[in-house]
Length: 266
Image 1 (cartoon, rainbow, N blue to C red):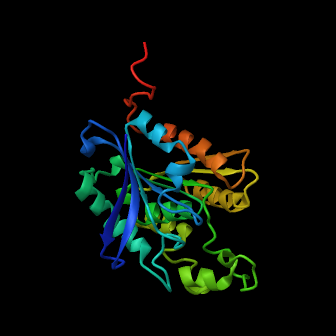
Image 2: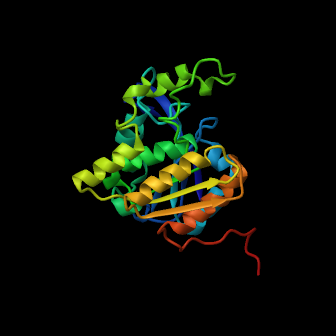
């Protein structure tokens, strides 16, 4: 596999940014499946590659991975910040197709993320459902409408109301908007557009498990083709390394990748 750190310009954000890309070798990249793999709140575009064995897993599937950089934006066009949602959807796939020749076909593109990135993947995948064959959230931070009673006294700034408002805007304007995954799904159904297959997983000791169960129930009530899995685990890389392998096994990816060894061993 080729492991690249790619620095490039985003016109949407009027700045330079970065992504980590993992590519199969000696293959036509227009034919490989592409997984857009979104990082969490405390990480950057290197997190997935540093803390999991995802490169090895991708090799087994002959898949490409794209891991963009979005800071602490929740993959949103921030109310007081940069337009990361526009960047992720409008720019990033086009840039990657220009650099690497990836296919634009829905069945070749998948959106996935952990924690903050799980929310970003779900929102992006439901907003632009015609572009992605499957949407996956690992320990998804479905907190977009749970901070009604938050104030600014929390010791960690990412739990303070002014942080959420900087990202999402006023609380009363979030629910029912395109920042609300439930509203996005209902709109998809109303318009008769295809809903992608979905996979959600969360650790039973994770503080986000209640929100994930609530979203699971909502998806089931609305007839979504959903795989939902819980297992022992916290909100950490031990859980995500285990479940990224399970997710890649679940996805309809190529299975022609060669195994890794230490050389020409007989």
